[in-house]
Length: 278
Image 1 (tube, rainbow, N blue to C red):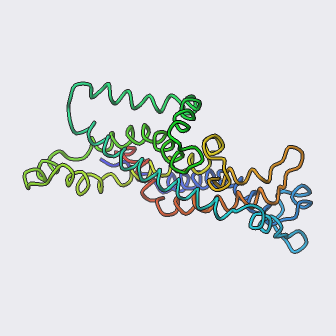
Image 2 (spheres, rainbow, N blue to C red; image 1 turned 90 degrees about the horizontal axis):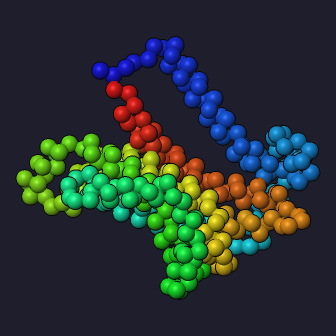
Image 3 (cartoon, rainbow, N blue to C red; image 1 turned 135 degrees about the vertical axis):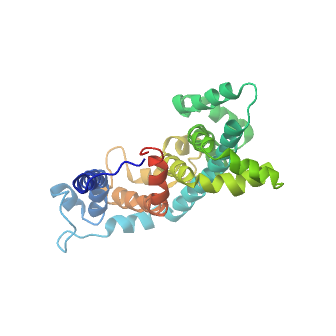
């Protein structure tokens, strides 16, 4: 039987949620408002809103003129979208196989994949770089896609396998009786039922990829393959930092993550809270 909160507790829960949301968004708010202010105004009063006396476009003008920010933005989009596609596709397939079929080593295979969650992929940076050099993939977006796909698969398999175990066996068996292939059952019956989990995996996979600096710096530092995060580093010097440009670049980089969250927020919340209240 579903547990229902009283009106007072519902209001309190919404108040707590709103408070946590405001706290989480406050750093983003500070970055955005300071991106529209002059350097002097940023340091004089960082919490002040952009006003006619301190308003300045110089950060965005610098970003658009110095370096090829649109190319960096395009590279980040290509790498992120391609990585998400392969993580969700291969992760869902592996999760379906582990949850649906019983074979020797099933449990060991699941544990092996789960190790990827506990062991950071960055520990293998030297070996990864050597493989990319041997394969001729250094300074290519393909190298980043391969690394991020490998990085996101363990978490995707772990989450999706648990959700796929809850899909009704009767539904899948009915599909088999009707003559559906395993591929049709997977794509037509199972995937639509685990969309909340897919949205959850997509959001938690996208953010580390979009914000990553380590692998773009190691594997693809060339000008034509720079990502947004790496491209923003051109405004950070050893002795002088162009804070207007840095804040403007970060503000623009926030937009794709925000759009993805707005698109998948409902599915994300359903995926996170599934099974929390019975």
